[in-house]
Image (cartoon, rainbow, N blue to C red; front, top):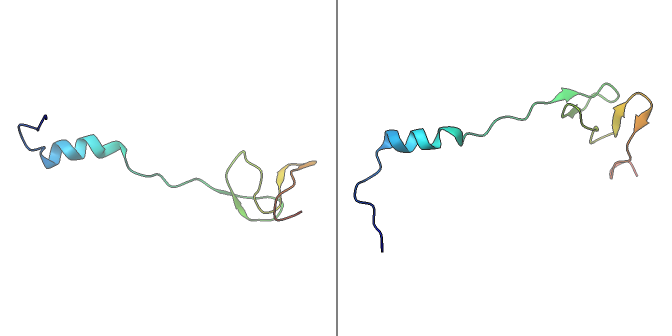
Amino acid sequence: MAVPAFRTSPGRKGKRRSHHALTATHTVLCPNCGAAKRPHQACPSCGYVRPGLQVKTAEGE
C-alpha cells in the first residue's frame, strides 16, 4: 500500500485549495414584483421573464 513519503506543507495545501472557495450568487431585482432573482432567468416568485411573457410558477398555480 502506498504511503506519502513526506508531509504536505500548509502552503502547498493552500495553493491546491485556492480555487475551492464559494462565490456569492449575483441577484437583481425583478422589475415586475421587486423580488430578488438571478439575471437572465425567470422570476421564481411571479414568473416574469420579459414584457409580454410570464412563466407559470409552482407558487402561482
